[in-house]
Every structure is written in C-alpha cells, then in structure tokens.
Length: 302
Ligand code: AMP
Image (tube, rainbow, N blue to C red; front, side, top):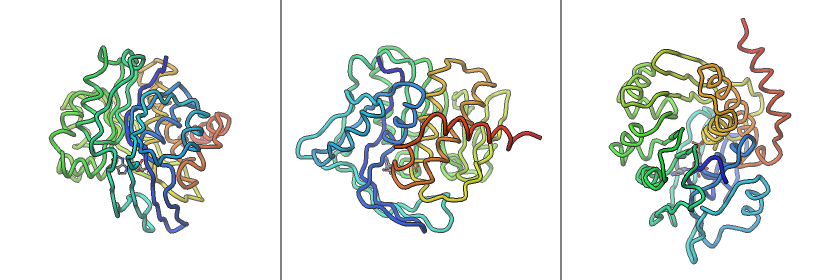
C-alpha cells in the first residue's frame, strides 16, 4: 500500500533561466513531489495527463517507485503545460503561459487502495481539486500538508483559505504568504495561518531557506549555499515531497524531528535546483542527500 498520497499537476514545462532553457520537459507539482518523496517513502500520484504523455516519463516515475494507479490518462487529451521564466532573481518565476488542458475538466478519483493512507500531500493544483481529494479519503489522514501558488490565490482566494483551514501543515513561499494575508510581514502571515487552525506554517524563501512556525516554536533553516543553480522550478514541490516522505518514514511529529524533516527537504530542493526539470532528481541518491545533510549541520552550528 502507498504510504503517501500526492495530488498535483503532472506537466510539460517550458522553462527559461539565465543559465539555459528546456521545452516540453517533465514537470508538475506532483511529479517533483512524488519523486522526492520516494527517496523516503512510497508515494502514489493522483493526477491526470493527456494521451501525449510519453511512455518514457511513465517508465521514469515507475523506476522511482512512484505508484501510478491514481494517474489518469485522458484519451485524446493534452497534458497540462506551463511556461515560465526566471530573471537574475531566481526566487520568483514569471508565468508566461498556463494551458490547463486536461486539468480543466479533471475530477480526481482516488483509487480504493489510497483511501486509507495516513499521509496526504495536497500539491499545487486548483484548491477545489485539493478539497475534493481530501473529502474522498476514507478517514482523515494523520498528516495533511498543502502547498499552493499565486495563481490560485489570485483567482480562488476563498478556496485557498478553506484548504489552509483543513490541513495540518501549510506550505507556501514568502510572496504567496504576503499576498494571501495582505501583509508584508511574514511573522504576521504565519500567525494568520496558525489562526486558521493549521498546526504548522512553513514559509519558503527560495535561496534564503525557510522558516517554520507553530504555536510554541520557531525554526529558521538557511538555504544551502549553491554555486551552480540552473533552474529552481520544482524546488518547492520537491521540498514538500521530501518533508512528507521523511515524516511518513519516521512517523514522529516532534519539534526536533520536524526540524530534521525541514533540513532533508532543503537538501533535496537544493539538488533539484542544480538541473533543469527532473535532471538532478533522476540521479540523486540517499548518499548524496545524507552528505549534504551533514553539511547543513555544520552550517547552522555556532
Ligand atoms: P515550484 O517551482 O515548486 O513552485 O513548481 C513548479 C511546477 O508547478 C512546474 O513544474 C509547473 O508545471 C507547475 N505549475 C505551474 N503552474 C501551475 C498551476 N497553475 N497549477 C498546477 N501546477 C502548476
């Protein structure tokens, strides 16, 4: 049985950064999150692709031990397509084009064997779909994490807030948190998340790391000092996938273990940014991750 259910987009991405570009490369929030998660715990995707989605990508996901029973292949449909660009500031992507394609009419159906999973990751996708997936679970999973993005905050703010209310851990980047709660102050934004009943708020700050807030604790994790960033696309999703994967593996939600989960998530996200699309995740091993984890320990020691 899969341990972690992940809903999100499975996409073709066109991405341009100052260091190169790719066209129609494998992307999507569920793709990055599930591949990252599978380093720690078995993940199953709930998502949709079109009949144009190549077998090569299916094979890659299977090789990474990602369960695809919940991935619908829509006959005659076209896979979701996202086109984004980054300037010298790699912390925020500029969306040039979003073609929802098969996502436009997608109605998630969770396979029976996913419905009792204890860990659910609501990756970046229409918040109404996130809520639909949550409502289809047989029981409330022990841990539900949600991510989102600026587009949904712009067009479906109320639904995004409803998601925040229903999950245990809310993940968003600094710009999204400021936008959702109409404040420039991240401490205030995190407190708003907690006031909506989310037990933990994690705000990602791109290359500058992330901060975690709960009722009684605060933790700040630096970004890994990467010299060769190529493409940050999917860094947030691989962060989220690793976070839930590590928590599923250890089943320990203590403050100490949450901090470890965040450092593992930061390690995998930083590797992801060293290549375009899933280039780096393809070859990443636990040995690489453990090595970088140790470096993190050194970095934060004083
Ligand atoms: P991240 O860089 O972690 O925020 O996520 C980037 C990924 O999100 C890309 O691979 C895109 O395909 C995907 N993405 C972009 N826009 C959307 C959207 N509106 N809904 C779902 N996924 C999206």
